[in-house]
Length: 159
Ligand SMILES: C[S@@+](CC[C@H](N)C(=O)[O-])C[C@H]1O[C@@H](n2cnc3c(N)ncnc32)[C@H](O)[C@@H]1O
Image (tube, rainbow, N blue to C red; front, side, top):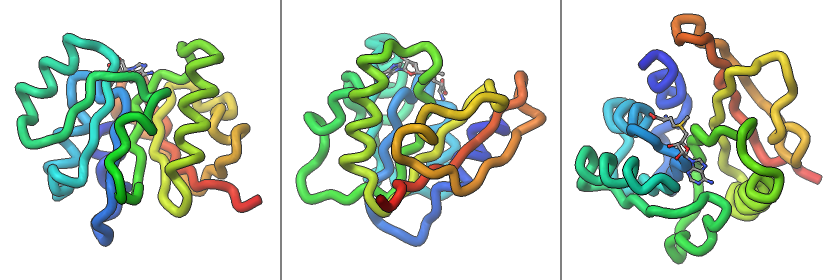
């Protein structure tokens, strides 16, 4: 819960663009986003697990929820929308290299002036996003989470 609240508090409410949540799982972060005041119509969830999608659709009937792979983000991307934030619970450490590469390419394509929020349970090692064209602009450790988690905010690197 503390982790979800920390992620949600960093999204920003001063914009009206799309907030994409890949890997929403059981919807802890989704719930925190709504509680923090994010309008449901700004959200697009992409979740690979069929059972999680069924659960999410039951919990959040007003949110666009795609049963799919974040590596295919462009295929689900609504026309004419602009991404303000990607709130990712994707387990980068356990994804295969091909999927990781495709997800990062999709993030680069769609996050131009927006941000990516990503958490990790391995704060000691440099996150793959930091080696892939994104700059970590802020980070905080949620000590009350078990295990403690590091929430990082990334912005696209201007090259
Ligand atoms: C750490 S769990 C999600 C935690 C989430 N915040 C919660 O409240 O449960 C990671 C989720 O990412 C999903 N996932 C993994 N790879 C994915 C991919 N390539 N595209 C979309 N979802 C993916 C898994 O199915 C899982 O539900």
